[in-house]
Image 1 (cartoon, rainbow, N blue to C red):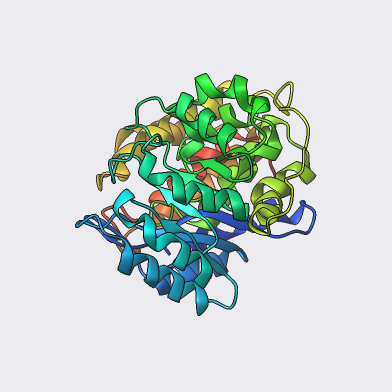
Image 2: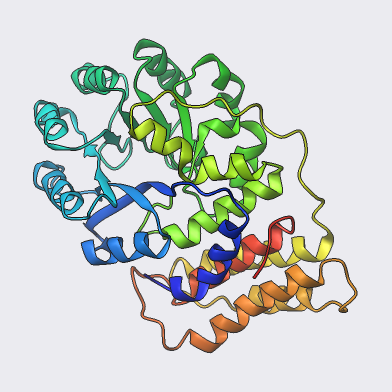
Length: 368
């Protein structure tokens, strides 16, 4: 999906140095919503490219009903040879259907607070939370930028239902500044990494214990290859060990999915693995500016040019290898952008630019 085949070498090089273990993306979607969509074939292909498994749940449905969409996810998961596991997207009016779907093979819940206008304190949701608690299932809760503070409700939910595993999506960015100090108070609170700036990934890894961080791509907004690469690179840059990175990329999520007790992998790292010097920082910052335009279907324009200039250093510069890798990704973008399909409104090749931005910000991670 997208330019996964071109980003693949960076993913393969990342996992080459990690302990063997399962890769599991905890945040993928199936369906068709406004300007974004993901077919079963695209999802399966993207997951296979990362040699991973994934949790899958529906995209937003315009009529607000998820009965058919949840059944569709369960059907696709059942035909995936174990690659996909369905979660139930829950709205209050359909709570009565949750137990049947869990009995049929779904393994947790998804709640989208903004698209479905949900309140975590809505008493109508209590039967669903009770089932997740009873069965030790994950509950993925949208925590994106348009959501107001839900920190108090998240902590209350974790305390009242200690055997469900609450996964706050998108780095919990709407509440990370409030919640990170309370993570050790609630052992069943986790965060997924499905956000597109390395700054938020770095903040998550520096503030939250590694055993509480789970990799997620938010497909179709990204892919497992792209976002597991970003997650793993930022984890290494933040100072996590290879064993901790392997847990983030799937080991801990697999334990949660299996109903096992999550592992305590220690505190967040005290400092980054290495300092980020001016030229990689300049390249990454400008590439993120270019990427913001590309995510709206526009051309990257001047920021891409500025980023290229930041990468042009002498061969004996300590950052020359990582900046050469950034330039290689940008060369691939220039070479292939006119041949890549436009999907979901994104400028073709956006994921090559995204990978370049992450590589520039993570010099401690290996490059192909």
